[in-house]
Length: 316
Image (cartoon, rainbow, N blue to C red):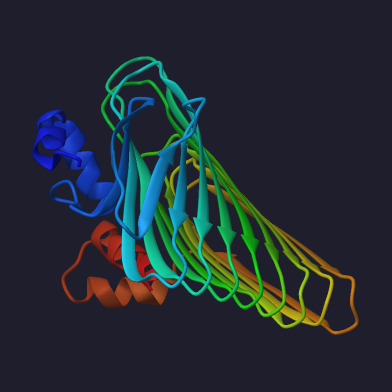
């Protein structure tokens, strides 16, 4: 049995603040959870419905959700407060048949040193027949050091017949560099929904790559990416939809560019079946001037008006 109070006592105030930002937790949860701190497992706790096992080589964890489990959640944040750390973790998830669960993950880096801090997380999801999973991932970078805050998440998804997965991924400023890789394979009737929200500033760089193979009949994927690039930051969005059956795929990439920032969107659609329907939409531009003027007439300064528009755009 995990001693929650002793776990909280092992964390300092910076770590507790990071935990709240990436997982919306004010304290250690009482259910299933796994907390990784500075490259090592801090604490984990299993329940009768969700079993968490550390990999034998110590490189990550295996999560087993039992069949028919409903309305349960798992928290698994990663927090880093050391400079010069290059963390790599492999986590595998096995969602049982007819289960319906939520996983709240994410990584927060607080770096106040001159050395780079980096976390590379490789998550592999196996969804059994008719299972449902909502996966929420938040990335945060902070700290006044000149060392970089680097986050490179890789998500591999294997969806069995009639399974469903919803992904919400959020990265709002602070992260110096990120390469976000998502690969998915969908069988008959499987449905995948991805919502990405991304904000970069200063000289930050963010690259996103989606590759989805629609293998099964009536499989479906919808990807919506909303991003804002400010100052001298750079963003690159790539999507690759492969339709090998009667299926539907839709990608929507909307971006706002400010200052001297740059945004690139590169779509690829590969229909290998005459019944495959694949669509890509992209719109990248600046904030409409009339929107800023309207808000300024209400008493806001230009910077305040821009912030209101950006927040509304990302939270929509």
